[in-house]
Image (cartoon, rainbow, N blue to C red; front, side):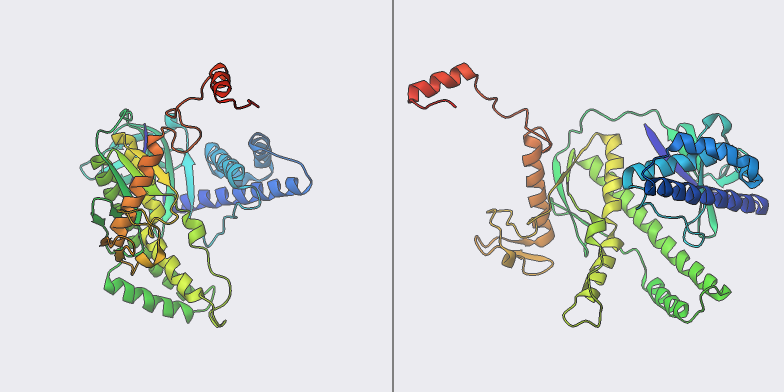
Length: 410
């Protein structure tokens, strides 16, 4: 199966400048092609990937700077735009801003990529027009390289390889089932009572981040000092993202290695973190409370954990099921009575019907597990009529049974 390997690249000054140039060309091609698609849509016409590739080849004759970037890289940019437009529509795809977008481009042809290990800690890759690029050999490739992607995060460059590792997904995982409740205090709680959580930012980093935000508010837009403060803020957030990704990967490996069926709530994080209407000064508005909840949800990385579980399940054969999240935190896992008053606090659940007392997150995880087992027991994961349900009787038997009971058949 296909998997990714990401390494930190060590560019020479010339390679870093050239990579920035390629990224700028790809950004220009993306924005121009997106504006062209929107113009065609306004006229009621359509233009696709094939036609834009032809026009790109013609544009290279008039604009020589387009030829500085490898042809396959620009074609991949148009292909990514085509996929984004098919998924979201031409009006919802965003522009690539010079200030907010970090350079990223992909080399799709494996025949033009050569990867070698030159030491215990170093490797190198030969990429079109970039030449030999050194990178830190932090982990083995473990397969055949299919493509390579160059990206910049802050002041560091990275090279990512798409690798065919030769493994296949097992038919089934023999482990038991488990329900996972994702929360804003504890990142993930299992129905077995295990709590998976860790802080992603230290107290010193939080204090430094607040101080940098105050400095940012006092800087002038476009100034060099503002750029320095933004870079320092990005460095702090980069460490937080790395810790969150590491936590999600470790938690996913633990869950998929232990359980054969993993049940998650079907949460749409994008909609859940939408801002509240109104302003902070408006009486009765909950803008401040909603913004705090949004930050807590995004900090725990709910969607990242879901992606990590799905990715790790490919190697263990675990089945991932998503169930509706409605009333899972208000339902008693013992008597199945739904009552909002039973959720006394964030951590305590006390059923008003049967008196069952349990940690609220564990109770919700048990309800999630029960809902997932009910779905998987029908054999269709709620996608249609279950094949395990009793089939309808033949029409002849229905007529005979109806005649015996003197019931007219419609």
